Length: 244
Image (cartoon, rainbow, N blue to C red; front, side, top):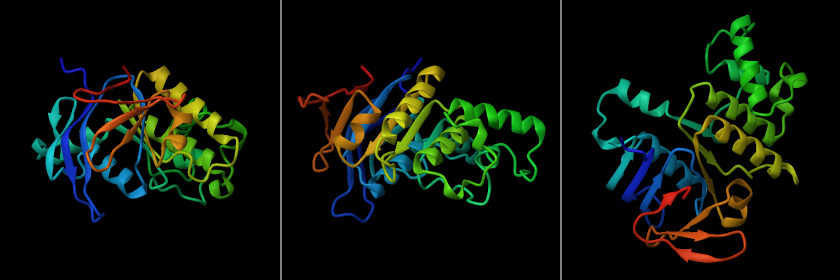
């Protein structure tokens, strides 16, 4: 049985930038927690779209659970593949006029005014798991902090029981001191469920609060370079298995 959840092999994808996104090799295994630095907002979106099969590489191969995304031609199979991912991103739209609980419930039903008792129970459980305080679940989302919004997105993502969490720029918009708490909740949920987590950040400093292992992308070559919190660097060649 293939134990690699997501694999990039000699991937190149043009997206309108000065050069294409290149990624020589990346393999994400169950339970791995890794941060990838060197991704701006656009290239993070490109990475997520490639990983989920929403777009295909111009060269190379992206595989999910051992299946190349280019070989998926059936829409139902593709939707099943997408369900293996939970996405934490500002691109995941939340409805301001609804409460956190209603926003979470929308992952399960469109009937949220009011939320049915059984759905409410499920949504509240997901909210608690994501670290949301119960007292504020029914208040409008509009004035929520960025960290609280990310927790709502985390709870929504968990409703599909994903195998991989893809987290885009989690520091964006966070107030000073919020990174540690959000990182703790993300890691706790991933660890408790035994799922992998990939954090995409602009640089190593923004990535380090969210993963013990940070890999910086060399945009010219597509190689990943291991950056340790103590400032030691080591180039990874050949196989790079996240989480090992």
